[in-house]
Length: 276
Image 1: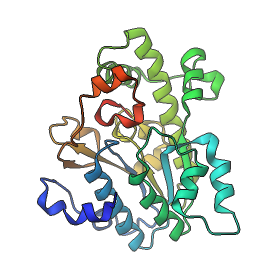
Image 2: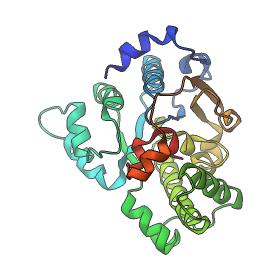
Image 3: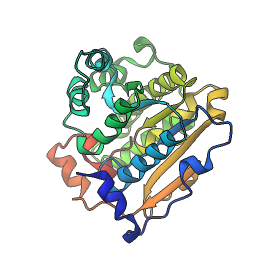
Image 4: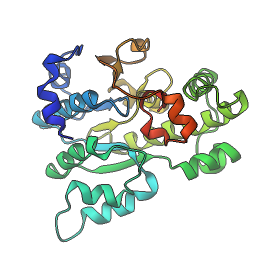
C-alpha cells in the first residue's frame, strides 16, 4: 500500500485538517515532542501522518521515532539490525522488531524508511502482551511501574476497555486490563523523556495520545509543556477535546469489530475497537 499515493487523493475525501505541523510549531521548537494518534486500520490517517512527518523533517528537526508497534524487548534486535555492515531497509527493521501480525506493516514501513534515511533513532515504545499480563495479575509496582494511577485515568481506561470489548469483559477484568494500559502509557512517557532533548515523534493509538488520560499524564511538567498531542479521529468521534489538535477523516471501511473480537482477532488489527 503506497501511503503517498493515498495522500495525493485526499482532496477528494472529506478530511478536516488543521494547518501543517511545521506551520504551527513555535519558532524556537527545534526539538518538538509530538504524539501522533491513529485509528490503527485507517489508511487515510496514516497517509496524513506520513506527510506530517515529512514536513517536520523538512524543517531540519531530527527527532527520535517512537513506535507503539514494537515491543520494548525487541529494542536490542532493532539496534543490532541498524548496526549491521549492510545498511538495513525498512523490512529488515520490521523483522528485527518481531513483525507482529497484529499490525498492517504497509502503514509503518514508510515511517521506518524515513527514520533510516535521516539516521533517526527507532525506539520500541510498547509493553508486550506478556508484560501486560504480568501487570494484570501482579500489579504495576512489581513490574517496575508507578502503582498510583489517578482515579480518573483508571476509570477512563476501564470504561473504554469495557466499551471496546463489546460487553465481552466484566468490570473486574476491565479494571485489571486498565492497569496494563497505564503501564504502556508510563513506558511511552519514559521513552519520550529519554529522547526529549533531540525531539520525539510518537506513533501510537489515539487512546495513548490523549492528553487527559494518556501518555501526557505521565510526562514531567517540563516535557508536557512542550508536547503536542494530535488526534487523528474518524468522523463522529466525540473526543476532540482530549487532544491539542485533531484531524478528522472518514471512517475506514471495516467489518463489525465485535464480530472480529468473537473470532479472536488481534487487538491491533481491529481498528476502532481497540482503545490504544
